[in-house]
Length: 169
Ligand code: ZN
Image 1 (cartoon, rainbow, N blue to C red):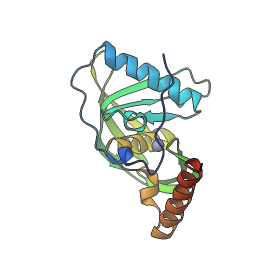
Image 2 (image 1 turned 180 degrees about the horizontal axis):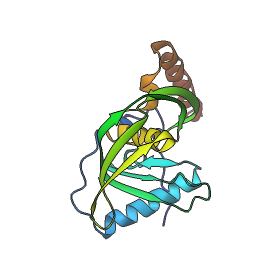
Image 3 (image 1 turned 90 degrees about the vertical axis):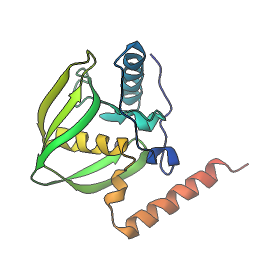
């Protein structure tokens, strides 16, 4: 297992639309393992392959308090949703930013698991938020895209400043 580098906003690779996974094989299982390790190390509850620079439709999550219930979602799709909820979200790719975002309250999720079996689950509450947030990543979308123009401008300026600071000699 390995801890991978997590891309941060405004890295253009976070805007790539991920391609469907066509083979559930040992290499994919290894990537999922590495992503889980990376997510746990960063103290996150979800991570999309897009965030580690791999444009594949693969998501890992673990919402359990003991961090011992890893979930791997291959080619996840929301096939139905209803209701609305507002939740404060953060993202491993947008460090130190927490903002309220409105999402569906309930979703029906279809995905393939690591043994190649098609699965379908109902999710609500935080699990539904997490699923919607992670699938957005696979479509090149970030939670900050839902914020007002003013807030987005402020974030962009902060990120630009961070980039300048990082490259200062
Ligand atoms: Zn995220």
